Length: 333
Ligand SMILES: [Mg+2]
Image 1 (cartoon, protein in one colour):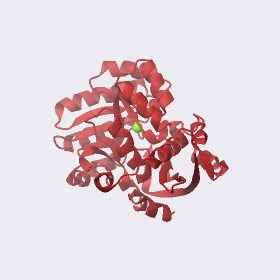
Image 2 (cartoon, rainbow, N blue to C red; image 1 turned 90 degrees about the horizontal axis):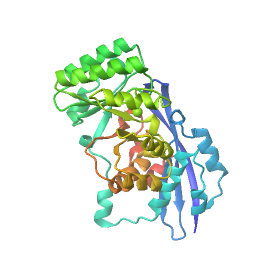
Image 3 (cartoon, rainbow, N blue to C red; image 1 turned 135 degrees about the vertical axis):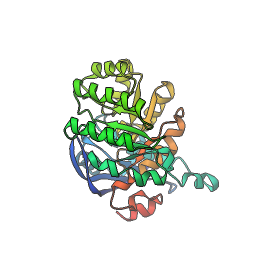
Image 4 (cartoon, rainbow, N blue to C red; image 1 turned 60 degrees about the vertical axis):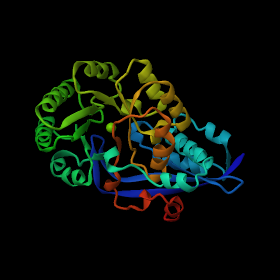
């Protein structure tokens, strides 16, 4: 069957640049996809690449879509190369969304994303985190994520201790180094995590991607040496990498950014057949991809009680692209 294919690019400004060890990120660019079948049903999809995570760039995804004809088939989608995982996800999701026609109660149930309790909240980087958690705590967030490995590590460790002193009981902190530490600094962070978790009311849930992806053996080694768990993120960006880390013996946490991982069908199938511990995480996508992940992907795999990493909408200036009326969202582009 052929589908009528349209796409529209979006550009979203961050309220303030998002600082990670890759530098400053000012604008999130992506594409909203719209497939229409012969009966007039619509399937929405989204391509939200992050080249720093090993996906195609936005420019590559854009040219890919510009190159496609306005009538495409399932075969076209099946042939998207593995070097374009964000496109594989976006087109795969659009195709699956086409086959679902919710009505009545099912439609109402679909009209939601996550509650604050289910999400982790991304704090500002550096010392700004110290006054960044109180408002979201009042709103009900209990899990917070903080980017590290950005400034001097002695300074960050001091802020970390202050943050752990301030955070109330039941608060849970995720640290994310984005691969920016080395063996010594990672060991220092993990030893500090172990110490502070036993000294204070709040706990460190895990340290995400302390070392670069090339240092898999050292990551495994660190995971075995400390009580604070390690989660892989950049190491497991795409399904190919998830499979490879699993085969090499990783049984710790997998942070999965489904929007970057490739075909949602294959990802779902892998998670259903391998008992891996997953933390679902945002690639700073709009509600189009979030809705698919929330309703079509997560419920299809074994449940986890860990918060999902989708508490990021507050980073964007506009809220138009957070809405669940996709026709309106489309019209705004
Ligand atoms: Mg991460």
